[in-house]
Image 1 (cartoon, rainbow, N blue to C red):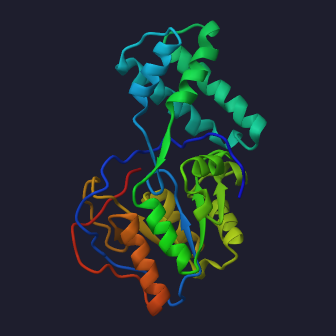
Image 2: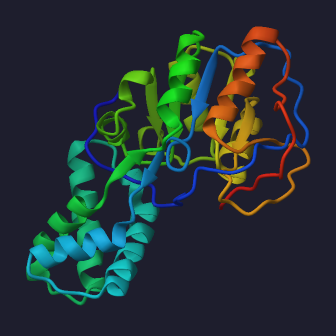
Image 3: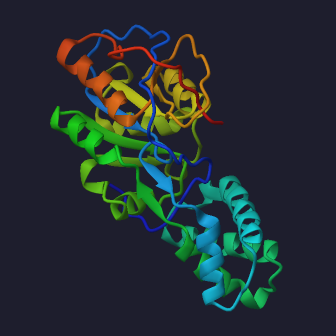
Length: 279
């Protein structure tokens, strides 16, 4: 597993983990019992603690007083810059340069001069906190106990492994592949190919769990990997007629474990409102 220090993809956050079970709206043919599970990260395993109030507080500690709305705007500007440039974070040195650039655009959005960039950088790093979603560790533990290899495949810079370790999930994973590692973001094929190599299996022997139809489900299917869309109960319900949908990571894991035990395609235990995906 690659050792890392700090990163986020900023693409989405999920705040509610409760709701009715998923509805299965169709599934691809998957005759081979899975040997590995590939997982998205943000929204699937990790959540981002509300950053605006934390950034406002950290800035105040460094003598920079701003309204929470200003802090939120500055954070959104920073996220947009990160998403555009995160592939540049290929090693520790380039991640540090990426942080410097993110701090510079954040300071500008806050109306601060160059002399305050270092303080803004420190506040930004202190404000960003990733936490494991409540169902992440139990689901990973159950899948791992069944003998499945678990590999994260995420649009992130090369520091993601450290983020997952700091969140308490690193020991439950067999590896991490990021878009910065391979030089292309999901839904491009290289992330999935690298994750399969790390898992030591063929596409038909893996199942991916992710919360984006475009980046996760479509990307995985293009490589020949079966995918489960994680549409948590807080998300608006949208029909996806040919997608297996789970409303929690526990449920997605149960669908895969049923395949391991029974060798059949995943089918939820009961019907409920259809899920949806952001992006």
